[in-house]
Image (cartoon, rainbow, N blue to C red):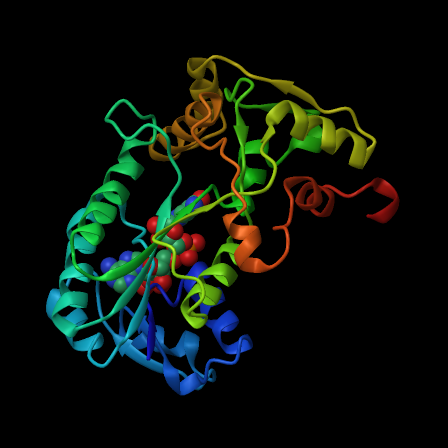
Length: 294
Ligand code: NAP
């Protein structure tokens, strides 16, 4: 039996769909959902559903009974993530789960000086716990979800004619979330894939200058790239009405990209998918098509 945590979320839901597509029987899949009401979202798939909250160790031990493999999807509440993840791994050990696939995050700087420390800290802690747990595991070091790139590029890029982000000449090797979920399902369903660490990146990393050039060519509209100071960026986001928390997240990711934290290309994902992942260039073509195809 394979258990998927975060099953009502986008990564978890996609992983379940891919497991079913790969021929895993519905009655061999169990989804972890937070509350009784959340069950509704997964009804109709024929899979089993268990209730458990990352904050409640007892609920997790109960939900994990009889599970052999687990896709452990990192929690979305960053301030609570360390204790939540400790609960999950403690419950996994108590319940006798044999193999854990954990969705982690790419980074180079593993110290408090990292602009992404708030995010990286709990992933590093969880990875260390997994490594010393005695459980068999695979860690998926996921690059940025490519689905989020338009938010960094800016919603009004075509109207304004520029990308405004302090990412300097840094590159990002973002990947479609659905393709990382597909690879996670492949790892869980195929015994041939059991590496301890996978680097899930795209095959080519692009800078925002190249992204601007690609959008210019696709749309026929010249898009400029401006890399302002971080202070100017924060002030501009504030003028657009963004809340401080969002400004902090966007700025941290921009700085991380500027210093190359997400500039890493590996063929791990290509090997598991059996094809190259959707490139950032293809993605941009779909999101910002030429005027003649609109
Ligand atoms: P998502 O759609 O927000 O899904 C998060 C899932 O975790 C939901 O099913 C949510 O359940 C569940 N969850 C959160 N807290 C929980 C708790 N206390 N107990 C039980 N379940 C809980 O996120 P996603 O897009 O699928 O991404 C999966 C994870 O990847 C995120 O949680 C985050 O850690 C990470 N992430 C990575 C990137 C990247 O660029 N690589 C970007 C964003 C996030 P509910 O439906 O009940 O809320």
